[in-house]
Structure formats: structure tokens, C-alpha cells
Image (cartoon, rainbow, N blue to C red; front, side, top):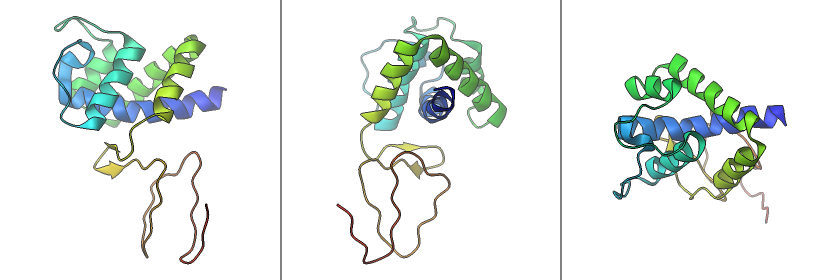
Length: 147
């Protein structure tokens, strides 16, 4: 399960980083405003589930605060990933809930530098570049069919 938690933490970190970048210190605050972007809203829900809901202006965990301050810093993202992994390792029920949330993630969410997270979809074309592949991924040649 440890390897699964590492992968889960990595996936969650992408969404939480996106939300932290958009919301800043209010990422854990419970507010009524709707996220204009589905990825930001989803990442915020993940962050709140893992770190808890906080009053606006209340301190956030250090690893999350560092990502809020500089979301593009790889060291900050690594520290956040580690904090998320620790939280998931310490609470198996939380890990199961977060895994279920990721499994139900809306299609077409974008994380990172405009990279698509594609779930339950099929991509066709002559040239597709993939940085990383996870879960149930099938790559076929033109003309191949799978149901």
C-alpha cells in the first residue's frame, strides 16, 4: 500500500498546488464562491479534506503555505507531496476517501502547465506526447479497436 500512497500523494499534490496558487491563503477557508475552474475547485476540496477547513486568514500547514508563496518551486511541491503522503499514511480512512475522490474526478481537468488529465477518454491522432502515464492506460495504433 505504501507505493500506492506515494502515487496517490503525487496525484493529489498537482491538484492542491493548482488550488493553492489560485486561492492563496484562503485555500482552506470555507467560502460560498464557486471556483471558475473545475481543477481549482477540485484541488481545493482535496486540500480541505486532507488539511481541514480553516477560517479565512487562519494559518495553513507550512508545506501548503510554501506552495502558496511559490507554487512553481519544485522543492515546495515536494514538501507538500510529503505532507500529503504523511497525512494519508497516518489515516487509512482518509487515504481511501481521497482515492475515491480522485476516481470520481471530473473529466477534462487540467493540472500543471496546462497538461490535461484525461479520465475515461480516448485520444486519437498521429502524434501524442505523454510525460507520464498512470492507472488504466491503453495506447493503441491507428486502426486498433478496444471496447
